[in-house]
Length: 255
Image (cartoon, rainbow, N blue to C red; front, side, top):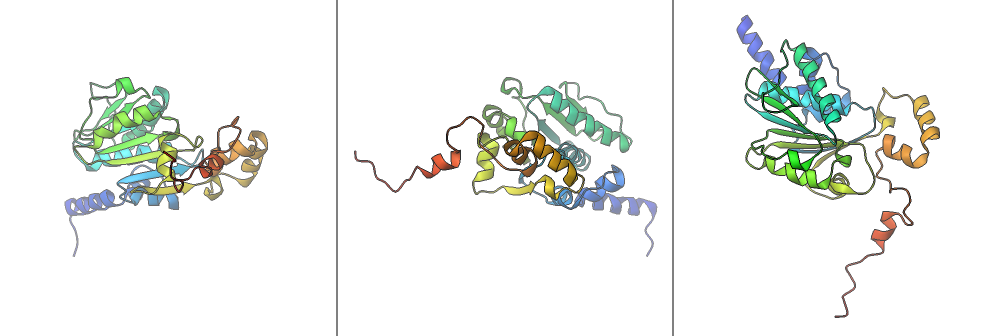
């Protein structure tokens, strides 16, 4: 049986809708590694990605956003970052991928950091200010980049965006101490699907470079920035883990 051109194109579209990594390789000219492929193709509703610096998290989130926009007509993707500059960089990557698809990037007319697709889908980037992010609903995909540095207040302000549409939520970050919602969500059991990618598992980062960074940064910062470890903030008299072990629920109060 031979498929005509229209049927073959429709079949390829279905394949791309189901296989994000293949879509990225054949349409966006980005070849994902094994872990990136698991992240992209996992159909994850609630995802936590704890990864090394320079692993490619901004690129992966941009691919997620563009794929969602292309294959869910009229969908809304929200990208949150600690600052407008970081959100703008994310959108720049998304626009670059859209141009590879032959799309001319333009804003949605309402939001400064935004992108409107021909099928009515939108990608909207939000800076790290709780006061300016309200008013969105029925979000299909929410990506919180550098989540460890986003405030708890902002996190609580954007979560309700998912209430109506039942959208997907991803928290993506390099650790930044044992504090904040990213650490809290990572450290407890729950519905999150967790991915951890230290630099030692990234073939694009050489061992020579890592040894140089460890010498330059010191043990504590190296473990945080490259080895995905939630180390305590410098200056504390006791590690947080020591303090937590000092508390127990087994002792009943006297009064």
